[in-house]
Image 1 (tube, one colour):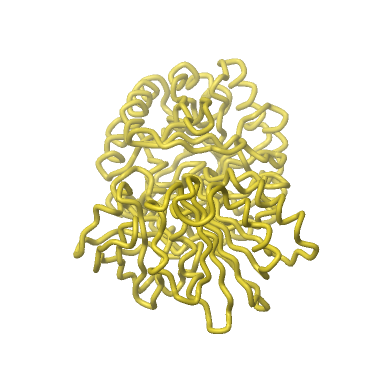
Image 2 (image 1 turned 60 degrees about the vertical axis):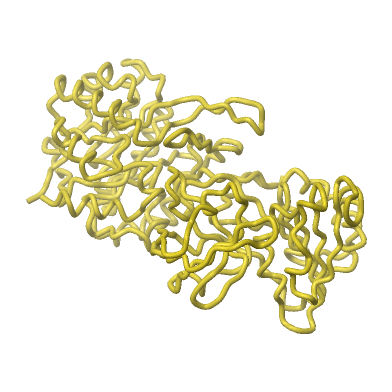
Length: 244
Length: 270
């Protein structure tokens, strides 16, 4: 964990997102899917940024056009604190990885879509409409994508809950980034359809507002079965079945 | 040169620099170990802690406000025994004095906390937080309980809105120094949950309120004062010193810029 400057080297678009590339050699090597940095973008609270692509010297973040990071331009330096938190942890024996995300939450899962050869990856991706979907052509070709839209304008019409049970039966490990309001229903399905539940079979991202990022302020509490945990140090990736 | 925050105490509380973090903002001493140059500071203020573990407030605890943040932790902490097991050795190795903040919940709990902390060489001083609702009699009872149980110098952190009303009672009850003040409380509407959240306010807007309180307290008592509230820059810290503070605590600014602690400390080197 360090506090260091990062240089914006590129800004572009990636589907509905603005893509910002940050050169951060002190930070990038420690990043992984689900870990994050806190960026000073001018607001009182630092902005949480999740890497969507990680290289040894730099990383990309994908943010909505309304996010303060979307206004960054190449050549600007940004003060970062990171890498922070506990990311997704893929058990060594995993062969079939299930990713579940709404398009808005997808960027945090994208580093997991680039796995070693021989890995089977399925992505259950949702959006309100086809126009708001992350383009499939931007995903690695090896990822098997199942689309769900609320209005049926693309893929299955309805909710991810309709297709989640079959995919959970298939998977060795499920990594989820969605609206936390869906998590209790997803957890219930996991309990129903899985006979054997390995440690951290289903992992879910929870991102409350954060102040310090290091566990000092106690502000980012998340309710879990046995009390509360802090998203910044215990998470932001939690066992889905542990969340309350 | 040093600043003595407890000149009337047998052990004193000498600091080589007037700058320290505020309780509730720095954790228990390890959280910022890789981000803050601790040796540049005058002291560490760690905690708050209570005699027994406290789960704290249910989420959400934090609401961004214009220019700042509202935070309601409910004094979440693992309790005195667990804190000592985990951190006493860390504090013993600290290059600067460690001041432990004890939440002033009730006289008997405060007494039991201070008794356990008393005599621990790793702890140079105690800071006692008072309930925001304490009247002079309640404040006196809590401070006397701490004073009677603690061997270390006792700093009392006053609630902002009652700082001038409580300061003389705090001195008479045994305070060696006063922190002026605890972050004020406010209420914010939490839209997603459709309810209000009441908590402490952090941000630059607290500085004028805390400065006013400190100046009023400085006119009433003559023990060392520690300015606390809304310090984000060297000039903010200097304003507290001009107003009569012997030392300064930095609160929410640490979250935004951990490096500011050492920066302000170096700029105010004595």
